[in-house]
Image (cartoon, rainbow, N blue to C red; front, side, top):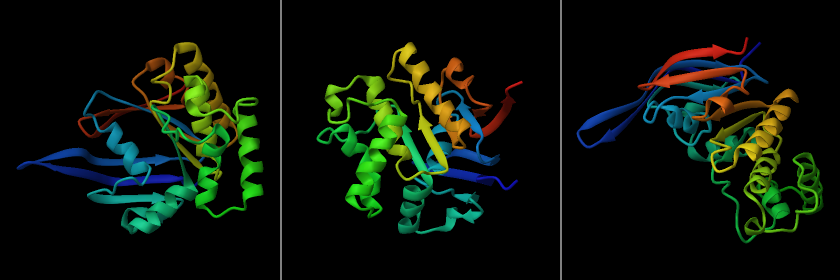
Length: 228
């Protein structure tokens, strides 16, 4: 089976004054379609850099990044934006919702950028809101929603364009434990339906949901654990 994502000897070096900082130091990984991963490691281990590269928010200094067989590490900014829009969904710890828009309008936003018809976008957004359990809250703005409800809006928005890959950065970090459990159950249900889920977390109980746990240290892969 061809991996949905492949890293081949990826390096990422930042310049901090005179001394280079090796955020990633020769990382090679394969993420199979429909798999679930938790990325863990201490501060400065490279996990956030890895997630940024996976999401095409940054480029490797050297090495190859292939998404669905396409070498995206060499694409220009416009093509990278298109890749992000069509192939990758993002879920963030701080939700990143637009406060002036309702829940339904936040979910519709990626469809607007794709140029979908308004009626089609509204229908798709309503279907996704139902999928993540937001019935009855569609016309509320983020300030009127609980943290868990806001994260459900963010997940629905990330699914709007039906991307094969869903990236989550500390998706339960601002939630209480009970709500975090609900959000992880939702993400794992999406995984069972075929989405590739890759999340960054520092919580071992959250990482335990994933099929594979990738531990980073000093910009390298320290070890990979698999669910038994």
